[in-house]
Length: 236
Image 1 (cartoon, rainbow, N blue to C red):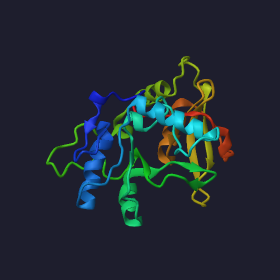
Image 2 (image 1 turned 90 degrees about the vertical axis):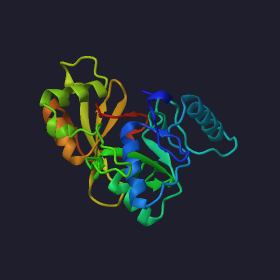
Image 3 (image 1 turned 45 degrees about the vertical axis):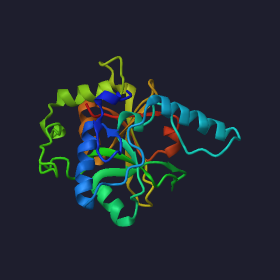
Image 4 (image 1 turned 30 degrees about the vertical axis):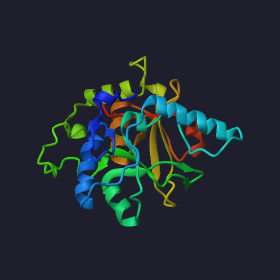
């Protein structure tokens, strides 16, 4: 779902807007940098996203070069969970990663957009820090996995995967594909084959979701099995 401009948070310094959780994380990144992080673009309007996508499609058909783009209903920029930045030196990326921001635009295992970072709250090692540079408290952060009941976990996950028949969780499976970092690690996704959606799961979380939903598991699949699927979030 596209984030409305009015629901996004101004991240200051003329840098645009983000969803509340990424905005809170960015304030902590600013503090770690000792200055405002460079942000070329954050939240993106659906109109701009669709225009970018049209230019990208034109490029694929032989037109002028255009960067990789997605339509508004698939763009992470449009939900306020992505930034484009020039702060991508090794020490800066280490800070971004520590705060839950990661590169995501790969093709055939090769990083294509070094400037594009997306926020993953469950990888943010500081998401429960309460001492912001502004002196404000993070009230929106919730220790969700620790506090939620199995029923809440199941409901949030089912809703996110858009399963219409909630008595039949077998519509979804957990799929793991090899990581792109050259290790033997597996990257986990929850896949709804009917809705053609995929939701990224991290190792600790995937066990909780799979056990509570009774999901079947397909291990070590070829990454191509996920091609063309719409990525969604399981954040309630």
